[in-house]
Amino acid sequence: MISAKDLENYMDSDTLTAIATILFVLVGFAQIIILNSQKRQTRIALIAQYRQLWTNCKKYFGDVIFIGREIGEYYQIHNQTKLKELEKLVSQHTLDEPTTWALESIQNVFNVLDELTIRILQGHLKVSDTYPIVGTGFLRHSRPLRQLLDSEYHSTYLANLSDKNHRRIHTEMQDWLIYHDGLRRRCLILIDILWAEAVRLEDLPPSDIRSAADAKIKTGKLNRSRVFKETIRLNGFRKICLAIDLSEFLRRAEYKSFWNYRGLKKSRLDNMEEDWTRRIFRNK
Image (cartoon, rainbow, N blue to C red; front, top):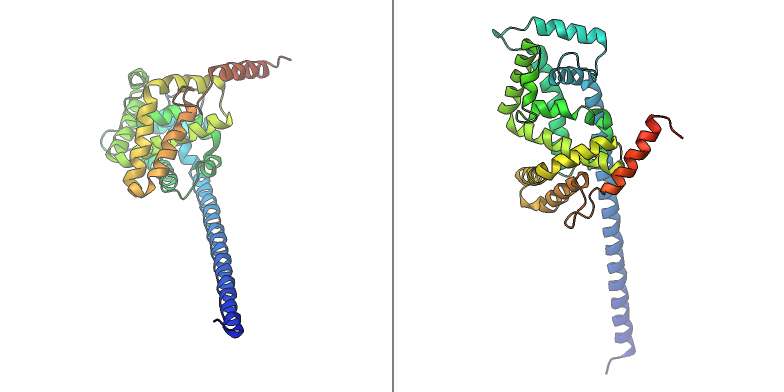
């Protein structure tokens, strides 16, 4: 028979085991909270770092948009004084040497955008963290950026450029990006991801959202495949869930369908366009 003393020792042992288990669980929870806090602090530090990098790139970004657009286009970043300086540099262009001022701008801007994309694809930054760094001002110039990054995008554009030297500089910058194909791909991915976030937040004019959604009827699958493959290329299959999440996130900028329940409703776009038109014309 078990004596009272043995029973007391047994109960004490069970009590100690239970207390130890509870302590281990509490320590585990504390470690999780500390790790999450550290990740959050790291993310905040990265956001601050890239916000400063992007701020420092603003003058170069204006040069890039100048190169991506035709001379005389209305939507530019630089003021008229700076635009006149750039037009003078274009007029002095020669085939005998690289266009160093344009190359410097292209490299500064697209290297920062490439770093941002890699941080997103590695899971170090969320899309919602990255979007405020560059904002809608970046996306409003997505066409000239795409025309530099993708030589097949609106291929008739170059043929219509009126300035011969400007066309040559444009082509020279495209060539540099083609030679740095990984960077070029990732910058295209960043534009797609941030565009989807802007659509989610309804930060763009409805007409722009609609025209992009129309284009994505043909290009949506290619864009999703590109972000999926690039995420796997950077991380291997251990980040396959992130690759799926990011590729599916792009569907937000596409029309809603049976396979895309989070996509755009055409009726919602119609209402947005009606409201937007009323506000822009100050109609009550």
